[in-house]
Image (tube, rainbow, N blue to C red):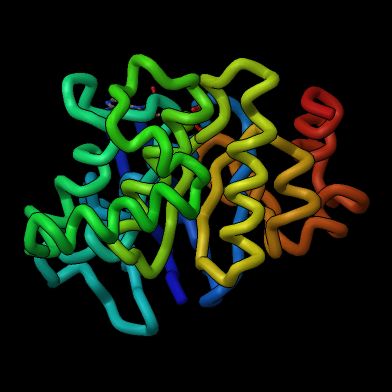
Length: 238
Ligand code: ATP
Ligand code: MG
């Protein structure tokens, strides 16, 4: 269970997060939707402590993590970005096994075995020796997901994981994310994919201008939006 409580963050005079609450029960998927610039990416970065909040708290399994070493939290939360951020000069296998050796301190053979197992789970074991540039965008994103999963995170964050992909490649990555969600992973998914938000996530949080305007189960958010702001957003994106 991951909870962000009354999170505030400013960049200079720009008050980007204005008291955000986000609660994700273990084994569930929370999607976060909202217009560009509303603070969705910043929220993820604050919740895994890539940026420290100015105010508020972050709790994992009921315990505040703000006094821990931030690296500890980043290892407990896997993150997948719009841009896959793979190392271009390394093989797919090395991309996945590197952190296993450095952070989880596995031996070379153990790291290789675990990395191959993760690649198999995302359907890319046969690409282990390829370089990222020789994969499609969808395959690269699946490698990035395998790399995050290999760290055995308790929670996975996805920030617009399919936004940089050609339309025909989006489906495969969404299918993998759906499998993860159904398999009981705890996930926070920032997405423009309203189908995923509506059909796969357990809760939907609608952000606008740094606040949570509405949150609830998908049926409520998509069929009975209570605010003009959410109604307006949905009519723009659906
Ligand atoms: P999008 O849907 O376009 O990805 P978003 O909801 O993820 O938008 P954020 O990227 O969180 O929005 O940005 C929220 C606000 O914070 C914007 O006004 C943005 O300009 C500002 N911002 C984000 N990152 C930084 C930064 N590193 N330094 C200064 N300002 C930033
Ligand atoms: Mg963003």
